[in-house]
Length: 298
Length: 309
Image 1 (tube, rainbow over the protein chains, first blue to last red):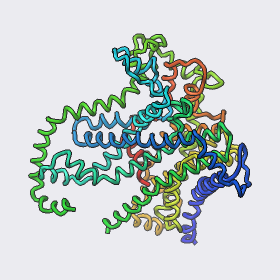
Image 2 (cartoon, helix red, strand yellow):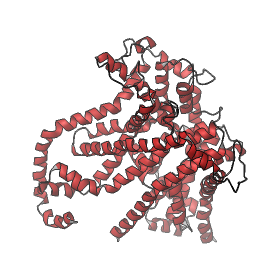
Image 3 (spheres, one colour):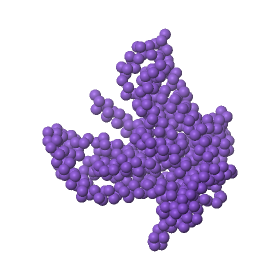
Image 4 (cartoon, rainbow over the protein chains, first blue to last red):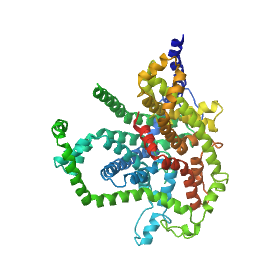
């Protein structure tokens, strides 16, 4: 009797998590996908018009703001990739130099604990033309300095990128530090005995060895970019005009401001597709690493 | 490959090699260390200056701010902005300051922590140490769910929460947080528990330990480390969350971040910079305290949240 029960208990213990997964994720995702094919507006409408079931997607891709959102997604991804590069450089420097590792790590990592809303507000303040950095530069005598990036559509995205880099730099540095620390110490001394220069050592040996850390960072960064919403709200609230909209912002806006469930769902489905496209490499890497670990274990 | 082959030969001289290496390394550090140190300091300044500016601004009277000396220390220090931010800052319709948001955030935080940690630790334990059918498939599904964008499940979840009568309550928000964080936390717990030796569990089962008894008596006491990591991850996630609070809080349960964003971004009233900055710091203080108090665990928590999947 007791053995039977001990077999049943774990299955029973899983039911809440199973229910959450089925309702909160599987059903919810299916519902949203279904809704994107309907003409639902303020309230869900479960009827699919066989002739126009793609109409929400047609409207979506005819929408100029959506086009801007997709372009901003790419710009933001490329721009924030600087955080990975800089994160690696900082990690390599902090790791090599004995002095002040703890201090530097504490400083670089604290923005992670700050919410993106606060981050956005802080940088909004720095970008303030009459009271922020621009005013400071003008007072120094550099009167042609332009730091009012958030006010013009062409540069507003760069302001958001700068704030994102500020927020994420420490995170990528921490991942890179973990990657660097896992490298066999023999390699450092072997390289030194062989007289390999530092530059050659990093470009020729260390970076290729850390390619999976880099790939993980790149994927995490892209997933984060797809979700970029808070920082946009806090810095520009989408403006000027629609110049800093992102797909995440677009989807929320279609639901909360335009009250259009079908339209918002279509945008969300495209977000999901983008995420899956980014995500597939991560699945493959994890599977590959697991197999490698098993092979190393046996 | 080639280095792996070369290492056995060199391991003999690696002791002397390392001695030589450290000596030459020391010399090299002298040469380039100033440049490296300056570069590190510049980056550190880039990261640290915004915090400094915000703190300084929040202590300045408004007349000093209008001068535009953003990096200068206050000439006459004042705590009025902090007082105003806490008590009388205008956020949307009311002018009660952000203290209501602070308490709402606390009310959201505790149920979220309890719900999500209870749910995921038990699930992770069952998946890691017991023979459960379809465990591999379930883990894979959780792995995917952990990265799904929130927008794809937002609208149906709003309908469910509204039907349960929980829309606009702290419990509604807490449940959504528990749902959203369950996949990732389960994976973290499972990865931690799977390293517990099987013999220990087998012995416990032989000793007539049941599923729950083993969890309570053996597993939970071993989980102190992972609990701290998960707590830090959850506190920062829930406290810093904006989107869930915005979409599920309605107007009756707005967490601090939503109130702050309302006050600064969307309100059309007069902008009082020093009060805004004080409000921003007050919002950021709780996770920052956690960070500075438990830095080592914090790094673990963040990186566990990122890659342990």
